[in-house]
Image (cartoon, rainbow, N blue to C red; front, side):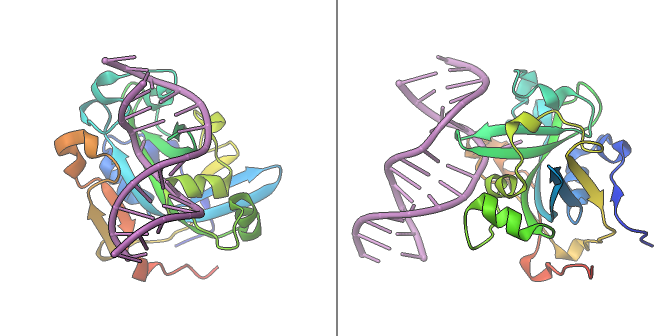
Length: 201
DNA sequence: CAGCAGATTGACT
DNA sequence: GTCAATCTGCTGC
């Protein structure tokens, strides 16, 4: 049953299986609320980054820099970083302190604040597929890296949307060819476009 | 349609 | 200096 949106609890993020959490994030709702302006969307695509052992991860081999420091904190906070000097990429940190696992959010389906998101994107067409475009639509920037996802301007909610496994496409991650064999791991999850059925509001 | 270069900053050699 | 968990617009078939 579903008694309205619930903010995801810390326990959701602090499990030990980052790949499972990436899968579970499909259908969850990401909300930002800056200056009283609320924008949100359903998460439709994610990728898991499994820390130490994962060549594609910023924390591979225990690498630790000021930029990726949030990855080493307890699950439930944001890790936002700049890619190609332009794009702010939003990740959800998982697992317990010291284990730098994270899930990259690659796509959302817009829900609230469509006009605001279009204005931020500077386009008549609202594109929110792609990790760089969704952060622009939601106004997420690197300054939000390290923020708690349960009580800040960025929150993740459970709206009771159930994503059936038959509607989920699993495959290798994108844009990480440098990661050798790890580039082939099935760590990418997305909702099949034909099943992007929105919940009745 | 495909393919590619430009944008622009942080991390590392 | 080079490359990076990318997107867009322009070129040319």
